Amino acid sequence: MNTEIPTAFSPGRLAGLELKNRVIKAATFEGMSRGGTPTEQLVGFHRRLAQGGVAMTTIAYCAVEADGRLSDDMMYLHEGIETELRQLVGAVQAAGARVSGQMAHCGNFSKNRRLQRLKRPLGPSRHFNMLGLPAGIPIAGAMTAGDIDYLVGAYGDAARLMKRIGFDAAEVHFGHGYALSQFISPRTNRRTDEYGGSLENRMRLPLRVLAAVRDAVGSDFPILGKISMCDGIKGGVSWDEGVAVAQAIDRGGVDALVTSAGTSSFNPMLMFHGPSIVRGMIEVEKNPIAKFGLRLVGPKLFRDYPYKELYLLDRAKRIRDSVQCSLVYIGGCGTLESMERVLAEGFDFVQLGRPLIQDPDFVRKAMQDPSYVNGCTHCNRCVALIDHPDGIRCPVNEEAAAHA
Image (tube, rainbow, N blue to C red):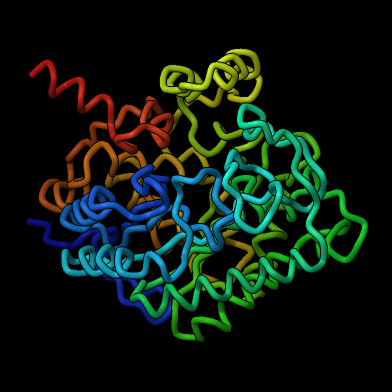
């Protein structure tokens, strides 16, 4: 009888943090912070994942300032919600998992009309704000040097708060078309000062942010960096330049890189693969202007990338061979066999999103039965529910329960 423990379920170490296995819940915006406050629903969502066996769960999109939110129903890291955040973190840790918070800022990609500091969203350059068009904010402005300094400080302050509250790790979002990604990408960064032009200049703000976060949390607190290995759009970060981006962040002192791809604003399907999310978005969209826009541009924006297991592995292996920090694989890993293959290829951890939304007991079940098959069909219907009043969930599960 073979009693060897699969590598996926063996302990791992992220900087100085001990993790009970190699499975991390990926940041998938939950839509459970109405009015900007973490809810009991959000606590239950992540506690359930902890009970299901993941080593660490990631609280998605913790904006570093109020104006860094895509909408008013996203939370941002500030003392006004410290009590709720402590309850969230404590509940997950009591259930047996570590907690990471994804630090993010929307930059020029926002539909939030309730801005506190700014008059309109700002990014590296003046830019068309497609997401904000239905909300009446179609144009985003360019950050001044003062705005950039403020943003760096906001990341540092947010990281300091996270550590004080009791988070176990922080994930800085460098990808998917949000603020730091907008500076990295030549498609959205058309600046002519020290923050634009060459890759070295385009990396200046992201690396300043990383340094500010490190200074705030100290050397023994794990920092992950989520990157887009490629934007998947003409004039954006290419697969080749993505390697150089990863190397720069590695040299900047990150403890682990999460190797994703694509941009929410231009090519989101590169990160998901599988059926287009536009159909589900049209179904749940209430704003008639936004619904019309999705029908009009959806087929061009949401491209066709058929799903297959480990669809980003070959690209991610280039990053693995180019950096010294730990590597976290994400992208089509829905079976124990897939997880074992990724870890055998030299990755340290695996992040799972959709499979854990479909079945939060994935890890526990696979530990009990290595032949366990997760029921996620990668239909991507869950992705369209981030703005739904009930938050993100698996529609297939609901339909099955209704017909049971």
